[in-house]
Image (cartoon, rainbow, N blue to C red; front, side, top):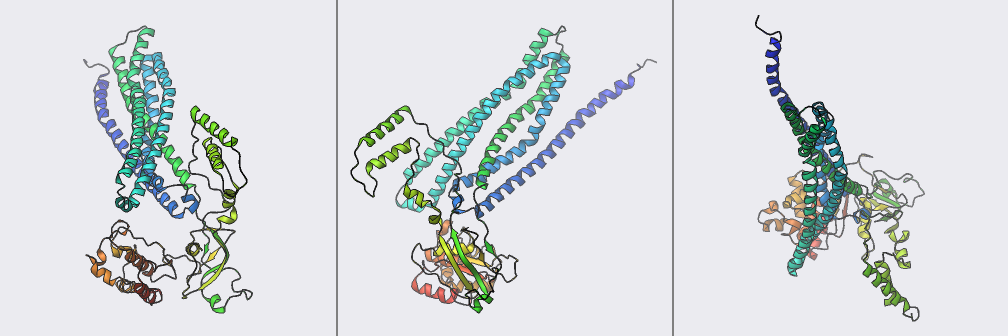
Length: 560
């Protein structure tokens, strides 16, 4: 009889709260961890996909598109810009949930302190334009950092490419100063970006949950008739503490959004560059077997390459390439503008004597002055150089190469021999719908390892000598030994410390020019499935007797 009527409620609710204090944080931690794992996997997949897309683009980009970018930009996009996309996806879940958490916390705070909550909401709305200024400055600083980073990476790549020449001429000091200057500019931009981010996010965004309770409590005391008790105060402070976590991740998410947007803009500019159009056809041209064509019957029956009145160019003559990033006009100071105008008046006042075919010094000075005023000058010669006809490299090429035949293309320097091989490979721009017909044994089914190419400048990778010859293909001992003997590499393997397992240094530093040429030839000769072999002056880097051996055993021997 002494038990109160709500005795069961007194027993159930405290234990329910205790269980809830354990279960709900456990579930929240479990679900947050799982969502973070899913987002991390998604971020890694996105970065891998974008990196693969950039690699594929680098293989198919045209010569005109390659001229509009640099190695430093591509390396920066592969490493830095893809990382920004990955980080944005990692913060995406927290950024998406943060506004919902803030709104729910404000509703609960409104139930505690009433209209005093709107003071805190007004304070947060006042932070919106401040955040806009901060985000704008961060975006500008980020672009400046990427600009200096591209220049530094490009300079480092050029130094590493020509390090031997730099060492020979003792140019370490000047190049070191240049790298230091670029790095100093990059560090200065990074420091400015770090300070802007720290002031904008740490002092403004992170301080909002701390300043908000002070403003709300001050307003509550002045407008409410009842005093502020401990329950209302501690509950409101707890709700504001809950808001600190989303307020901490919201600016990080906005920052990553800005950086990812800049990265996507850079990636889209590169991916929108012109690509090579596929013009190689794995079949014979229509009407090839007609009797009207002046071809031999043997050539008609088994051709390897057919080109009919083909026209090719390294740059598409019908397109005007756009720069990757349009240069910004540099604003001249008042002194520079006055000096340029004064120079123009002096040059125009000088009398011209006669007409000559070469431009005078006054004309050159006038052109330089006009260029300093951001006025473009076009001459007749420049317009002729940019004409459509001058962009075409090969015109009206017609040829039919029989399978099993040895064809040599002979010509003077710059006549287009290497360009002809590049046209067969599909590495040039086809003009007026030109096609290169390379029929295959399997009909229209495209197979790998059917075309081998040995470039004029031999190259090796940082791998063993056997790895350079195999190049990812399956190892066949019999075929490998035949190719080694035909390419005169037997004596070289005996000299190398580990034979064909000797690791080749960067850019073939421990191989001579002739050895690199023979390794490149062996790489092209190794595949027994090759139907078409293109060799671009493979004997230029070897001695006469070695060249005779290569021509007899490799090029015209049983290996080929």
